[in-house]
Structure formats: structure tokens, C-alpha cells
Length: 327
Image (cartoon, rainbow, N blue to C red; front, side, top):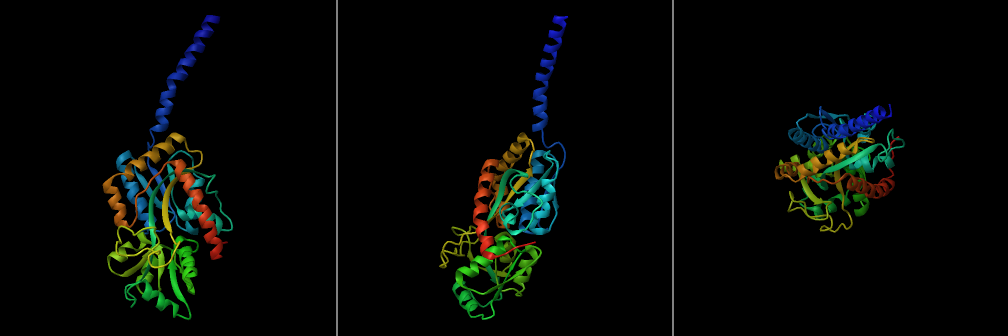
């Protein structure tokens, strides 16, 4: 009897041991069905375009559809909430941004998610600079001429953004304070609409995400006066930095990252991150992102967590300085 029990116990142990590789294989076999990438911003904007470029390449590499779904509103918060409440199985991810990950918690009176506790960071996947742009029809040919014109506007200038609390909004506030301008914020429902109104000459300027402005810059519909990067931006080699035109300590970058719901298996998070890191090194993908106005960047989940935490410190101060609040 004892011998039979021992044999049964040994058999059970052997069966459990033999199933471990299978369980691991199942967890790392992700994805075995379509993956949904939820983006909180409108179709045609920088975040949307770059997310779709990455989604297509992930699909090509991993053999499953990566479907981009736009859930706009509340500065991207709707998309974050949707992912936070999704099953942590690796099949619903969020295309987050600097705003949804490091700004909105200080801007909105209440969030229905915690940007730290409710998500598993995967990797960054794009970075770009903001750029001071004006309508191409404006008579000023450089930053100095434009600033002289703006300072003569007793009733103030107008600047556009894709919404309250976005980096173009906060950058516009900070820029106006830096150079001593009275500036009126004109928010729109998305980057495309904001850029279009600027190009039409109905707005005086914007300190906008360069990816939003790249098509207009390429078509000669807007003029770039300065970039908010620490060095000249590769696609605009003739456009000076803010430091070069005399505005010191005004470096602003925008970025995007991928997130999964908290509790997603580490094997899935790591595989997802590794795939993004591999893709980021592909020359064709780097060129594709560059053509939109962005750099393809990537990192480990831990590095993303640390980076977002540092960004929160900076943008908390910016939100406080702007006085912006959203109920």
C-alpha cells in the first residue's frame, strides 16, 4: 500500500514537472490571437501614425494582428482607463504618451486609474522635439523678427494646442513666460486640427510636437523658428535650438510608450519589450519614424518606469506654473 502511494506521489510529481515547460511555453507563446493597441488620440495625429507603424511591424514579426483602436477624449485618459480595466493577459495594450503617463495626474481633478499602479511598463517607442512654428504667410523670417512682432501685439498673441494640459499647451505657457509675451491659448480636439488652423493663419504660433507639424513643414505651409531639443533636430538642420536663439533652459521632448495592465505575466511583458527593442534597431523602421518627425527609441520595462517617474517631477512643476486644471 505504501509502495503504491509512493508510486502515485512520484508519478504526480513527475507529471507536474513535465507540465512546467509546457506552461512556460504557453506563457511565452504570446501572442496566439490578435492584440489590441488602444490609442487615446485622434487618427492622423503623431501618436496614432507612429502607433500604427509599430503595430504593422509587430504583426509582421509575431504573426498575429496588432489592431489599433482610437478611444479619444479627456487627454488620453479614456484609453488609459480602458486598458487599466482590461484582463491582464497581454491582449490589450495602451499606446501611452508623456501626457497620459506623466502629466494628467497633476492636471485632472480625478482619474479613474493610477498611472503607476495600474500598468505594467513595456517600452518607450518614440521621442521627438517640440518646435515653435508660425504660418508660412507670416512676414517674419526668423525668431528675432517674429519675437519683435509678437511683443508689439498689445492684445497678445494666440497659440494652439491639441488640448488643455498637453505638452504643446504647457510648452506654450512656459515659452510665453520665458520671453515675456501675453499669449492666449486656443485648444483644439486634436493635433491635426490645431496644426491645420495654424497653417491657415488663424492662429499666430504653436510650440507643437514636430511630428504633428512635419507634413505642413514639408509642404511649406508653416515655418519653423526654433526647436525645443538640446541640439538641432536631424530633419530640420537649418532651424536653431531655443538656446541658440537666446532662450536658455527650455528643452521639451514628447514621447510615447507601450503599457499593459498590471498583473500581466512577466514573460509576456518581457517578450513584448524585447520585440520593440529589436524593431527599434531596424534601419527601415528608424527611417519610417524619422519621416514622420520622430526618433524610434526603446528601453526595458524597468528603464521606462524610472524615466516616467523623472518626467512626472518635471511636468508636475509645469502644470502648477500653468495653473491649468481639468475637472
